Length: 433
Ligand code: SAH
Ligand code: F3S
Image 1 (cartoon, rainbow, N blue to C red):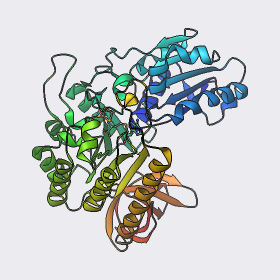
Image 2 (cartoon, rainbow, N blue to C red):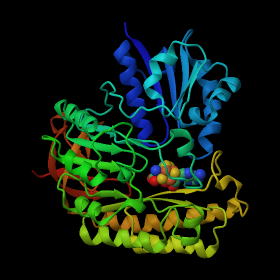
Image 3 (cartoon, rainbow, N blue to C red):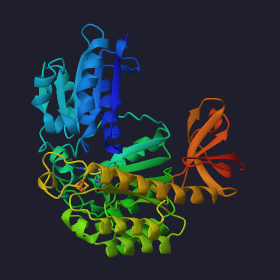
């Protein structure tokens, strides 16, 4: 009988892919079956995020709960970014944890499993040429890393400390991984990196040196691959050649994340983002003009140290001007290993909360109008998930979630769908072709 694995994945798409990597690695050694019940698991993994403070506090209470519920002899491992930055301290504070594995070391999962209280968190470790075993949580879509780590020094962000310096994965390895995924049923790929459009910055070895635009061109030649998505690009590296490729390459989905963080040039400077409000707006205008059908999503932080009312109004102004289709917004959270944790002009929590509510309320108003506009439109939808009550879901090319009535025959198919009903988070439709 195969062993059972319970794995909880917090945080970003990169963590989702790291969890897949760990499952693949474990399965190459001995078969594991995934379970949703802690009580049944032989191995419990918490794949953590440390971008904001809340999940760290949650982690220790969760370890306690899991320890009470786990069966005799089951192991608990803490992996991901919190593992990277707390390391040994996790075991000191919670000795029930059997191993700690950093975000840049996931390929070592089978090694740490064998050593009691192993801690592997080196950010110098080079996983960039590592060929991982195959495992996909969704058979119709593949996630593929194109780079690891991040060389930027955004003053609020802990990621460079947890994931280490940026290394690009050799393009031949990327193509090989996608080709394998396509051969086993994936028509869509999501390219992953902290800074995807900085691809080519540094390779571990003597690989062919190409940039992100060239990588996109190379990947789009893969036969049978129909859709390419990527996350996250950085506004600083959105040169015209890249945006032209984005707009004109029919395999690239017309959905782009352009993380703003703040609309104030003064705050952007304090964040060391490398662009101004005007540069940012210029890039979004370029996207809208080259590719009016594209949706633009963004990340915004409110309450960064020193953010005045006027700075916040600048952020609201960018919101009005760009009319983002999706906004992920957060209150600033001071993090260890970052410059901004030492900044003194701290914004009181009530003010940050107020700003966040105002921003979200305004975005929801804009979103409601945008979603209403979708009524009667026809989209190409790639169906990838069976839902309860005879429904199937998929995504439009521009990234919107659509539900239709149907059965598993639709899975893995791209169909024309007419939108019949809208809500804030998703669309309902019927297959017309
Ligand atoms: N490389 C990614 C960022 C990864 S972190 C990118 O450029 O999109 C994901 C998001 O979390 C960031 O874009 C930022 O909006 C938010 N974030 C990061 N650190 C934060 C902090 N200290 N407080 C609040 N939000 C933060
Ligand atoms: Fe973080 Fe900035 Fe890199 S947000 S992941 S340091 S681009």
